[in-house]
Length: 395
Image (cartoon, rainbow, N blue to C red; front, side, top):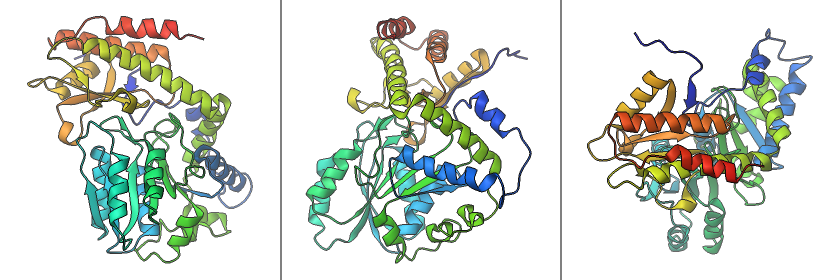
């Protein structure tokens, strides 16, 4: 039997490390949901999420994971048979499309190779062809957690505008919010979805949907079935209805503490930290990748590589799942799996949320040992490359 000591390095791209402060915030008795302390606490979380989404419009909280926020986004603004345009960037963009198909929406995929971000020019061209405005929404994933490809959501907004198309603009920011800039109002995004268990440093179980005035207006005529997800129900003045029933109190206690931590660092500070740590990971991976026939980046273009997660491909004949198992069982470091068409062909290092330099270096060191133990071609010294970068950029 393997004896494990010390804490597990949770380097998955969700869930992420939950800070001790957040855990302690949950260690209390349940309280009255209708009077006293809880209503202003919940209202404060709803209002402060607007600061994170950078919107003056509404943000809704669901007791659900990110898939729940996806469903809320779709069913509130669309009707059966509506056509949506979905530029593919990876497993999660395709999964959102499959959910839309389950609602009898007509999903038109712009194919992608899972290594590059979708081309805004292709979106503009397709929308320009749609002179009857049959396409009712464009669905974009800012960072696809499976591929670690990040899409330029500002460029996508410009593409929609250049085509002079009225389609709603829906953005999945689940794996990006808190790691890179996102400005819902300024960039005129109609619906933004996110979740608690990634860069926002909370436990799994909450998801969020931001809705613009245009989206709220669309919700008044949309006919997809909804009740729990219904924005109109949740805009009722009774605080009981903000959560369509009993509130997930302890998750809200956690959210309050995690939002406080975000604002203490500032969003801009969080963006800088995530960018620096992501670059350290990429320096290490780039060094490993100097060996022929070894590991490499899934995201082909440096400018499209995520600040939240790095997907690392393994050579033909190597089982990425076996590397993950070795890393977890031997060194107590948990990595993300390859998903979808990358299953067994890649592994992922998450670097978002409550992380710092020692966590990054420990994860890279453990992976490098596993590469050596499994005789996977790599240029030794990836950890040193990361150290050199962190030393050169230390404040």
